[in-house]
Structure formats: structure tokens, C-alpha cells
Length: 288
Image 1 (cartoon, one colour):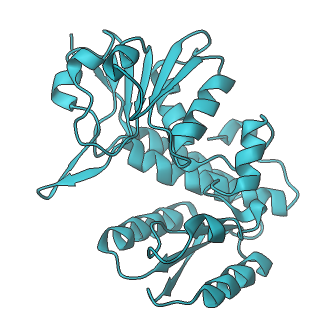
Image 2: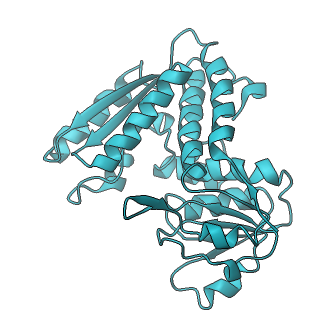
């Protein structure tokens, strides 16, 4: 068998059409401020892609570039200023930060209403409680990809490979809310391939290139590859795509799978934030 390709680029493009229509119904364009600290080339590329996507849907994307030497006090003041700026509806702190800066400390300073990356403790707690929140963009995008091929998830066994605050844990929570039976597997899980072989849905988010082989995957499973590993100038996922695509029922590629969806969900969260500030209901028919 050959797995169905889950085309994240195409699905994200359709989502952006809806986001643009929603944005056009607002009197004031949403504002998204991105803080980029230092000169990491990969981060700069990611930020430029986000700014380009903002422009496409009518969101005012602002880049605030700070030197790697920025002090904690200066970064605090910058976030505080953005929190109070009524023209800014979303604040994104581009990760990773220089090692001397505690990323979670500064993410926690972002106004929860503007934490459109969904990484602050308030939004994390609201999400875990099943209450309205900004949900982390990558897990939210993964869920949309899964549902594009398996609309009904209730009762399915999902295995999330990885337990990070960025992806693994919120991904597991979202799948629980879809009534999946969820297992989180990680570096301390014994006989990890035996666990992953039980999965109807397998989400790999560990940062180890091509870790997941064909014999780790249940025939017909839906496989979502979150990994982005640069090897000799090429991007590789956490899944051995060539081998696993002969076993899985559906699979995301790297690149072109999860990455575009992460950006689309960032735009959607920003648009939703602007609607809340305007005290308007986000158009349900355009919901991402």
C-alpha cells in the first residue's frame, strides 16, 4: 500500500482564505508583533515567513529585532509596552532565546489575551481545563491535519512521541478532548516501538531524524511528523518517510506538512484575538 499524502501546504492555503475573509470584516486590522532576539539565521527565516503570511491575510505584522545582548530589563519593558498597545492583538516571542534568558519567564509576561502562540501558563491551564484559550499553534495544526483524513477520532488510540511543553503535552490534551485513548511515549519508555505500533494515530515530535521506522507503525495508521532536522542542508523529519509511507494509511511530509499549518494557526489565533478585542464573534463558518 502507499499512504495518502496529507498536504499541509494546501490545507493551510485554504485556511488562510477563511482567515483573510474574517480579517476583512474587522474595522481595525489585527496586529501581530514578533520579537526576534539575536542573529540566528533559521529564526530569521521563520519570522520572515510569518510576516509574509500576515501580509497575505491582512494582519499587520511587526518585527521587533533586539540584539543578543539585550538585558532582561529591556526585554521586560518591550513586552510590557506591547501588552499595553491597543493596536497589537498578538505577541510572539521567537524561540529559541539566547541561553542566558529564561524563555518561559518572558513568555509568562505576555498578556494571556495576546499570547497567540499559546505557550503561557494561563492559556495552557485553560486549554487543559477544556476552556476557551489560545491553543499552541503546532498541536492545533496537527489536529487539523489529522481530522482532514480522519474526521471522527472518538475511540481511536493515539500515541504522541515526545512530551515537550511546545508540542507533545498539548497535543495529547487536544487528542483527549477528541475522545481518543492517548499514550505519551518518550525517551524513558521501554520498548517504545511496541507502543507506537498500537497507534491508530501517531504524532512524532522528538527531534531525532528518521527515528520512526516502518516496523514502528501500525498498518493503516495516520502519521503526523512534527520533526524538523537539518541534515547536510536537507530537512528531515522524525519519521523515515520513504519506509513508513509504505505502511501508513496517511502521512505528512517534511517539509510541507506541519510547518505551514503552524503558521496558519498563528494567523487564526491572532484574528480571533482581534475579534475578542472588538467584542465581536468570530464567524463560525470561517473557523480554522
